[in-house]
Length: 255
Image 1: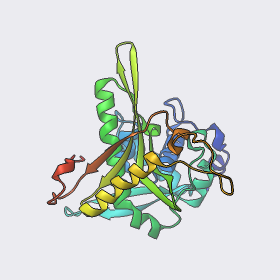
Image 2: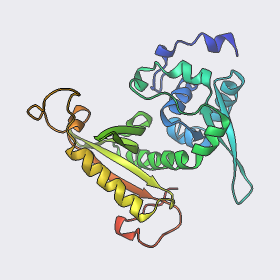
Image 3: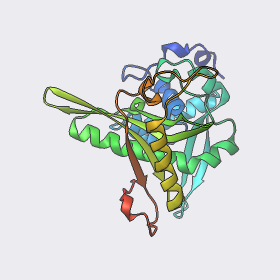
């Protein structure tokens, strides 16, 4: 690992175009967990070249901050899916943009390979919204999509969203902020499981946390008000082969 890379203070890394691309790549992987070279280009430098991102990734890999797992598809093309090493996760854990996030979940190449298919599908969903935002003049960047957000719904249970999306609609002089829980299904979830997910979000809507060991007090409102001024919308993104019984929810192909 180079001494230059070691000398980068984590708190100096920020997600702005003025920051070095290497810093943004590290922060992007910390935020989105796993991403391919192409996805990182579309996320951080949509007008840049693949070679630009590849050079940065290869340098970060030689410095020990990132590693990759190689994916093969039906066309026998080899795609690299990148993730942070333990050293890369340590470097990024104190970034202001990542405060409050749980520890980076990828601890080995095996863990990366197990999480890769679903995680990449979630990243593709984000990129589809980001591309629309750029086209329409709205705001939705890499840090407006938070994967794996968990909330208590009582009785020791939690609902975990694939992502929480923040999207700002810009209309003339007016700005409208939208929020949504996002669930991505790659045709691997049964219709029953999709229904259970809906029930879990309904439980979150009504759940009111009570301090342990105290008498029930006057309600302070639903627990979700601690994080959101209004309850986020719920978006199901269905991708992959069509499956009978899912048409009622609609279907959005991710490209």
